Image (cartoon, rainbow, N blue to C red):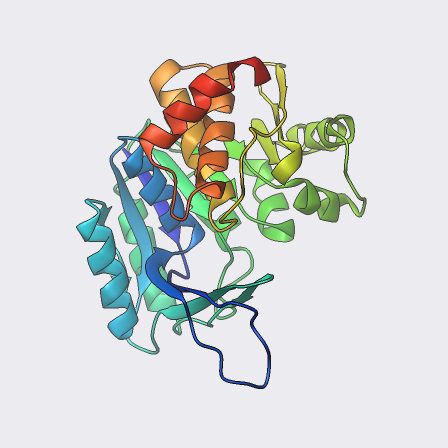
Amino acid sequence: MIYTVTFNPSLDYIVAVDNFTCGVVNRTKEEMIFPGGKGINVSMVLQNLGHKNTALGFLAGFTGREIQRLLEEKGIETDFITVDKGISRINVKLRSNQETEINGQGPAISEADISKLYGKLDDLKDGDILVLAGSIPDVMPNSMYMDIMRYLQNKKLKIVVDATKDLLVNVLQYHPFLIKPNNHELGDIFGVTLESKEDVIRYARQLQQKGARNVLVSMAGAGAVLVAEDGSIFKAEAPKGTVVNSVGAGDSMVAGFLAGYLEHGSYAAAFRMGVCTGSASAFSRELATKAEVIALLEKNQKLF
């Protein structure tokens, strides 16, 4: 079974406005509402690709109930912890001449709530996959991902971590199956700017030396790189297409990688699937569907 953990889920309220202007009344031309958060995005794309999974995390208030309803409507199994104080956040994604985001704070998660999460993690079995994705609310310790991996270190799990800076670096000693920084996040870890794939490979190897088994680096329009634990290195340019939605593309790449690995058992197949799934989401108003991913795979065979 695949499990995703989203510590700060959201309702993503996406609005399109022609020529947004500050200080005046702007009227939307289009509105959409989706459940959001990086782990939830991974869950939704995995479901689209035909891989059942369970979404874990924390929900609160009327917004939390709506997040759960929308996920269950999509057929995704959920096992969230209900938090007493606050509400799950609403994130506003404004699409106009530029994309702008306003992200909410989220509920107050207590030590008792965190203990409940550990209780759910106790149910994971050898061979399961756990995806830890996204930021940690301010009310939680910055060591949260590391604490979870330490807690689970005696289980034979494949753990995926999609996070930034210390949240990511601190887990490397526990040998995550996959980490997925983008090139800017990878550069931030080492205090450098990374633009070429050769530079990305060099620093991805350093994260591998620190403990990561596989390092998948997204580079937006410049493509992606995978430094695999068997010594293989994969590079690809980004598939051609019109980017209409940057939200969730990296999460989609994680979901596609896992789907490709589970279906074919090879890092080459996982990389192809990851790249095309991330691009399919970027080219779509919503997250990638299986049909969109297959179409990109067939169209872009020469990229790999």
